[in-house]
Image (tube, rainbow, N blue to C red; front, top):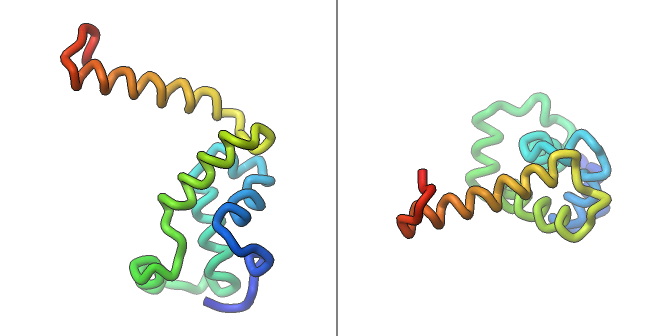
Amino acid sequence: MSKPTIFSNFKTVREKVVYLLQNDGLKDSDERLIANFWAQEVGSGSDKMTAEQFLRLYSKGVLTSAESIRRTRQIIQKQMPELRGKNYEERKKLSVQTAIDANKATFGLPGAQ
């Protein structure tokens, strides 16, 4: 990891995710959010990093896990409506329907797929 980035001003994953969610293009894409998060963690020189170097950092726990970033985004968007993207409501409805379908399948209820 190299020179300090804007992330040097933040201590927690939450603070970093809140900062990144100010960008509308990251509100609806976990992949883009996570990629930008890691680019900030790695700092300048990330464009010269090989996949092997990146995977080594990730596997050693040097980089924040994708799941931590995603879960933090989910909590923040639940608590802070102004940081929700255009797809927030649709994702919410889909997750509720998925839970209903899973319960139907688990308990053998009518309508299970």
